Length: 394
Image 1 (tube, one colour):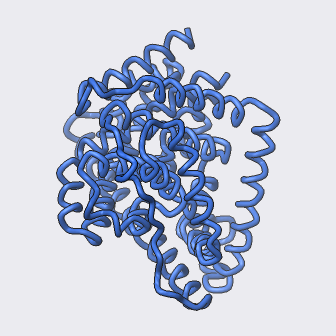
Image 2: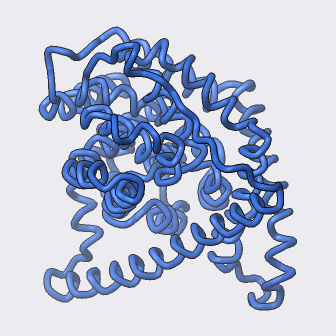
């Protein structure tokens, strides 16, 4: 039964991508099949092998240390604000982003990240059927984030055609930034965060190869890494500290607004129809939850969490998941968790188009024009990742 659902989910996801494809005759099946195979291999390793367990434990332990170091700075500034036994979300989940941002800045300053991103991008381009720029951008998105990544290719933005820009934006929305991984790991199991990070990277290429297939000429595929004016080490530290703090504040502000709005809409909907808006949307997403492998008795709960992520953001959905985890099976929790690890939500359309527009107004308007199709593609990536995870979980 699990295999039947897996195949049915793949067929549905590919069909949903195919019906909106720009050039169906240009779809290349070889890289798609190759990357599905790679997703299955990586999912099996990360979820079901001792080697994968070692990797997950290693990454999780590293982030535990990072979060403990971050806590020292947070406690120095905000110590005593929290009541004993409480765990304020802003202090424990959002503010550690500041410290992780600093570490990313140091790796960037020492030219470690550009080296990794550049050559890993070149390697990925050998299997994904797309250009080196697309591969570079996907890896960079997983490190820098969906808005910051476009700074690394700002010199090329004026020359990037619309079809390639769509793929770049899909990668940015489908992945998550390294600075925020620690925050996710405080809310869901680290193994699901890492698994989703890897699977989404390939999933973005797969969906883009169906929705937006094209060929890239060699002379159109130069990779440039942004060269900033030379900063001193401490100038760089100050910049990344402030960048991390801005991210924490922005995410916090969005959560305040979205959680409050959901509360109001749920109340009004319940008064009018006797059911909350989130639960109503849960029934819409329930069939998708069933296909990706969630047990039938839990599909409405799963669908509710999935729809919440799409309408608001992954943090709101992860908080909702944490509240009902005890009532769900481990299998359902795993599948929902990997679905949540991406930036595929309505607010990201504005974030990405705004980031691009800040660098090039014309290209920013182009992104806004295909914004809904961008979210559509990124959501299919999340469903594909959930499907791959579902076949691998017991």
